Image 1: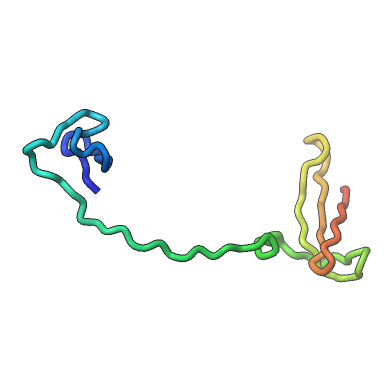
Image 2: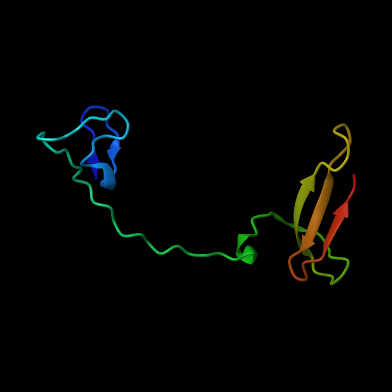
Length: 102
């Protein structure tokens, strides 16, 4: 990768001979400045499914559908701001979702 010695912009491969795209500095007959850094190969990226992305807290709450005693929970402000939020639960076993108003 080459950089413009005047403004520091990256010199684009197609335009190196034409000069800097930002300040029009031309390096004809001048010393070329290059980077000594090497770009490493990209590492393999792991793909997670939606099931792996469950980051909700788990509480002890009995599911009314299957009887399991563990559930994820989250809260949402479904009514006006001066009223309590609605608490939602999702069973860790059968994934049945229910809510509790306060």
